[in-house]
Image (cartoon, rainbow, N blue to C red; front, side, top):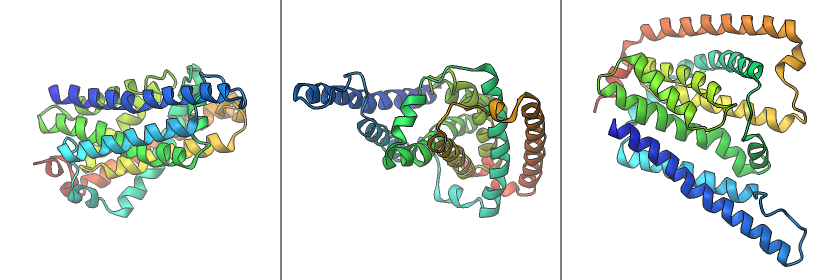
Length: 271
């Protein structure tokens, strides 16, 4: 368990190490602009470009450390073992799962503390790349490979490993609106990781999820929800239909992976 604690602490502390100076630097820049007679900007307002580069540096540094220390046990073999058709087959399941979980999250109307932050970051190209690509790779290597994979290799039951990594994945977001969604998404991504023995399906689905969020934030100019757009009755019908389709796709994927015993985690995660 010391390894798990070390990985989580590294993730949290490294994030603070890069983001806190970026926030302070941004506030200092706003103060200096005010003193020099430039347009008055509140010192508490964060410059999205500075914060973006801080978060980008965190993700790159975390990925490097995980690969260098081999806490993430991903290898060329485990990255290439999953063919393109297997990766593509995971995307529809992720799409319907995302829709259902997002819908459930809307019903609870949880507070989103990071909405303004994400909107500001998405005003820059590096921000889009960080949220849509770098963050998914970093988080999958951290929570699926370094944490869940370590638990598997140490003999814990499969669903215990999946749930533990999903819980940590949810909690580390520190945002009420994201925690339930991240936990549910973590269950699905953890299951994919267990059934395939590779982080690639999770990375592809995670990038797909974040990219949808990026496009929806950029394209939308209102706070309209699924319930607002569809109406209550249609929303319920869509949720039921989405859940059924997701379960069918998940069942099909499970059967499909059963026909490929060579891509199970027991073989891909051995040292």
